[in-house]
Length: 178
Ligand code: IMP
Ligand code: MG
Image 1 (cartoon, rainbow, N blue to C red):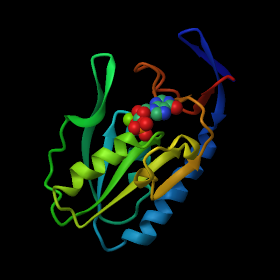
Image 2: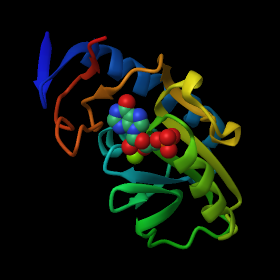
Image 3: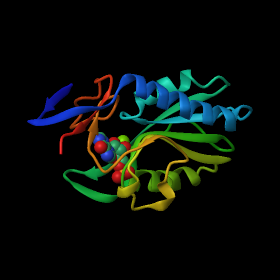
Image 4: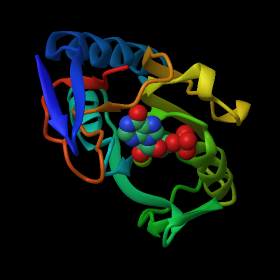
């Protein structure tokens, strides 16, 4: 099946069934590592909201959730820096935090956000990304600790991922046709 946004054609790339398997796999890995730790899942809005809600429901131990919105653009140009446009509202000092991200691309967002979090003195910081584009990575410290799937350098939409704020509601993931 394919969909069209802004005149561009996207083909189904990761089905709902495959997404459910990816989520389950990541949840099991996190459950193995965090059974007694009561992690705080930090959902990076809005892209990770679908992944976060499914991931949390598949995590069988005590945990809590917080949200943040990150922005790297001021107007139309990238500042090369990332700020919290909707800041984190919880105190993470001495907590084990897991940043839940939709996709790690260049790694710029996670590189800066991990530094912001570090200054608030959590006990540990890990990143769980639904998708990861290893060939696009420019900041090695942003490599996700947990990842649903590695993909080539394709633009993808759906299941939270947007094209100019649209397409987040597609239940499966679609890739821009080459
Ligand atoms: P990074 O800072 O370059 O790693 O990019 C991370 C952010 O860019 C993600 O949180 C997404 O919001 C967005 N992004 C990167 N690749 C894609 C994509 O293929 N589709 C939709 N959004 C993307
Ligand atoms: Mg994002």
